Image: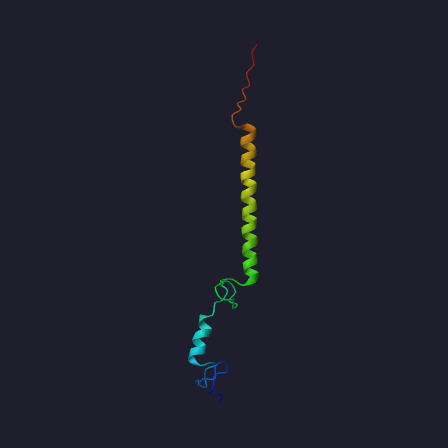
Length: 89
C-alpha cells in the first residue's frame, strides 16, 4: 500500500492520492473560470479564453468607433445648416 505522498514524501492515508497539506495546496491552485484548466498564479482565464475575450473587446471597440465616426460625420454635414424649401413666386 502507498502510505507516502508522491509530492512531498509525508505520510498519507492509503485511500487518498495525496497527503492533507498537498491536497489543500491542489485545491488552492487557480483554474480557468470557463473550462476549469489549471492556469498560472493571478490569472483567471486560460490562454484560449483570454484571447477570445480580447477579440470580443476589440470587436466591440470597433463597433463603438464606427458609431461615433458616423455621428461626427453627420454633425459636420448637417449641424447648423437649415434647409428651407421656400418658393417665392
